[in-house]
Image 1 (cartoon, rainbow, N blue to C red):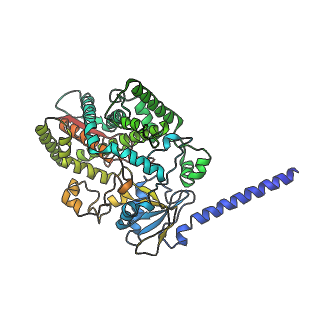
Image 2 (image 1 turned 135 degrees about the horizontal axis):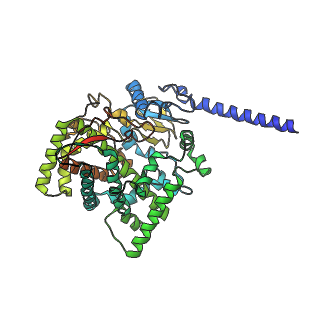
Image 3 (image 1 turned 135 degrees about the vertical axis):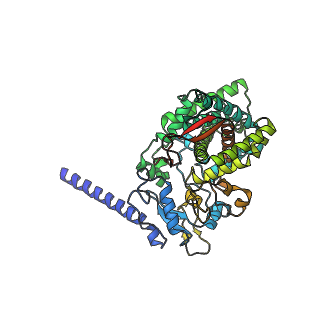
Length: 499
């Protein structure tokens, strides 16, 4: 009997191994069978075997784009356990993101509203759930709402300037200052206030819980690379297995913060011009208002998207300005002229900082925080003017960083040149040649807010300080190889001098 059980077990193991082998062979021959240009994948790692080891997420897509652009409208690519179509033609990018958006409205990200409610936020949602949530949240990010939130951003900016000043013991000389963490504390306090109505005070206390939990989302993942690949490759199965992506301590913290804030505002009838107030109002909608879990998830993603992306972008901008003093001087001159005119940092003043905006846009081109964007084909999609079909369910990758470094679109792409974003220069390029916020109906809903806090932060810093390279400054800057969003490895140390 024991021998029989042993034999049956071996047969089952052999059968499972054979099935898995067949699955891998079928998966990794997908693009070859369809006659689509592609690179040979590494089993279980796809075309990204070096990510996190010797390269960031940028390099494989830059190389792939440069190799196959002009040879086909898209190329075949493999993530760990799923195939993807990497778009190589800007007209096809425009079709996918704008004109034929309805067939590519899904991101295909994993979320599990039952077991991991904080994951079911606007960025991850698909289908009717995404459309309804997007429609509900859109009024939060109008120009009027930005106008109302600006004083809060400015007030925190003023505190930020005082914290930076404390890093400079004496006047009249420059001191090396680690700006990356300071910027993250600034944006944490801004988003904490606007998303949760809380005075996080991370500017004065860098170890405050709000700051630590925000950092954990990016530095302490719940799963390793293979488990994450499984979740993204088989989201329905992962959901059936009740898997989660958020760490329990992070999820518990944000759920508690939302509950405490809700209870306090309800009890004391608090009304504020912030994101959280709108979420509270959305609970009362007649045709099905937001549940507590939905409210918490949206507050969480607003915080997540707002503090890391803006602080990293501002850090990269200061680094570039430190290496290009003539551009920094021109930007400071503009800031001083606008401040002299308006006497304060109001909404009208912010809108007049055109050159500073160009600097911000050029920084986002050179350092694309999201190096790729992903959509999923809902139905089979015959690619116009070709014999190719992108099959339903296929992931579609827009290689943002590669497009931003295409020398045919941006000559000398490694050069830092804010004049690329003068109105005249923008007019000469495709509308999808610059995609830090995406494009079309599924673009970044908070782009106005992100731009506002970055302009305020940079404007106030340039008005008060001069930045230059220190002996500790990494030139070229080192990029974190393990992070999926673009960030520097370690801090960004610059010489800072009071103006």
